[in-house]
Figure 1: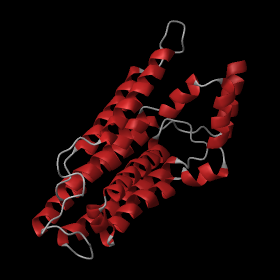
Figure 2: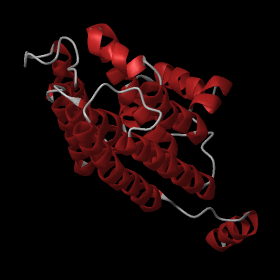
Figure 3: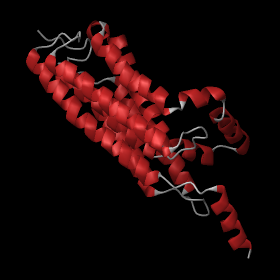
Length: 262
């Protein structure tokens, strides 16, 4: 027997679905401000990416979670696809360019705080995203979300925030003073793919998981998780490679400076 998430199976319009629209409205207002005559400008591609992320997030929040397959679509949209598109919109950079100088400096100082170093490390993002899934499906937590709308909403918030943190730590164009080098980030992506695939296989086989769903629903949800999750992580790796700029060695930097002054 499968159970639906409490408070979501009746098809009602969740107020949380208005959040993506509000986020995009604020982002668009800031981007248009930068594109005023005489302003520094703002790339259309970043605006389009953030708009796509807001759209995917709204789709995830409105998706009917009537069974485990619906829940898995929510996970993929809210926790993997929307965060990547939102992060590639560089919202922190946009915020820094629209804040006054004093507030901007305070935000930069916050990004350089030791706590930000820990939170912004890809391993932390991996533990929160992949570790959160293992906790959700291998313990009674998922079962509890079926009876508690508040807990269900909290899980969706975790999907979104941990997904954004992971995508930002891997491939975000926003400032990341403590971001490790590209090889480290590629290894973390590889571990994430393996962790995601393993929990999908356990769900498909119905082993060690505590999910009250039929075998057919488990197999369908696990298949979605396995293939679409892989596609999302490949897209994340491609975004990392697309935004990667090779670091120049001190010797090459010095040579470049000499050439520039010649």
